[in-house]
Length: 173
Image 1: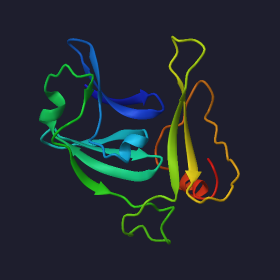
Image 2 (image 1 turned 120 degrees about the horizontal axis):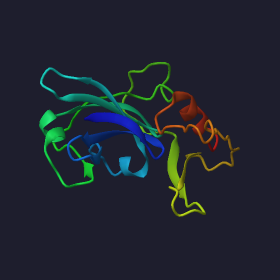
Image 3 (image 1 turned 180 degrees about the vertical axis):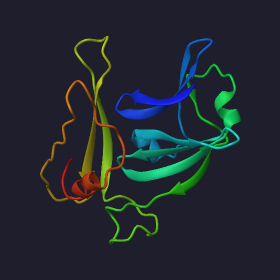
Image 4 (image 1 turned 60 degrees about the horizontal axis):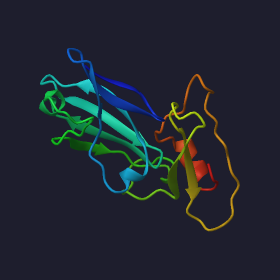
């Protein structure tokens, strides 16, 4: 069984083997730049051959669409994290917030840096508190905009939001 669920501060793909009750995180291939942030995943559809079309999005880049082969997702493995070796990047969408009114632009870097912060809790049985800090790349002092989540009953996922990207290019968010 493959589904998406909250995993820390991101929506992630999870594989549950019903017969063994084994839970495994399904991740996508990453670059060194990807490893600096937490991406959220969505399962978009399944092809007639059983392959999955999924998307991932992070705070420092817009959405990408991937093809995950069925055989990579169903083979038994002892690993706690599955990274499909046959994953194929189908599309990479440009940043609407950083473009000049057109979504068709060459690939470019974001005008801000992203830091994922994990703060330990006083109770060791609880997971750490996670936060995402976006800082403009300019050397000028800037104000801080705090975007709180909905409280202990919900959280904000780590996905690309054009409005936040615009704010982060001018302020610490």
